[in-house]
Length: 216
Image (cartoon, rainbow, N blue to C red; front, side):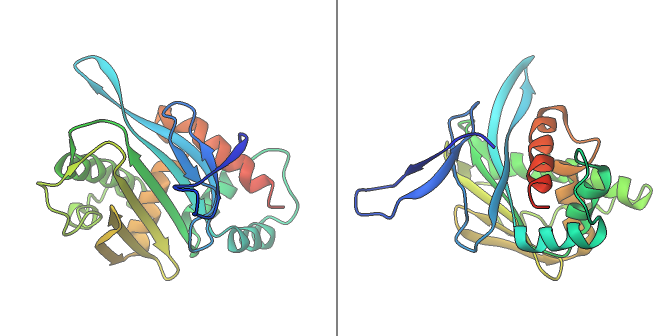
């Protein structure tokens, strides 16, 4: 991971260690309030009219104690470099993980995010199930979030896998979806950690792999 720095919202606030995502300048906390630790950061881009537009920065957090226990139980000694088995354990494991998303593209709407998420999750589900689309399940990620909501620059989304394979989604701190589904949990985190992840996410995937190595 890159160098961390400390920051605070005001002088009276307790200082919180943050990590700066270099391409967007977004400061992500090193730890979430629930104790999950930052393992990687990245940037999502979208091609619009031939231009690569920065859409959002993201950070992936995990319950590293449980991830560490799982890695040591299933793999034992640290390999020389991250292996596909390690990534698969993270994708499939029943322990807490969170993707924190901060928007950088102005004018972004929930309807646009829903469409993007749905298409990507459907593809991920198909690869896990041998071709079953299951669009209804994919559409549950943003659940009751209104399509009319505009996500101003700096808006935050959190998609969390809770123990028991519950996928929980919050938009600017408001709970909009809570779905118990192992398949949906695996499909969502596979988008960031799967071996065929999007090109713009490969660097963050490797960062997550190095973080896993450090847990041994």
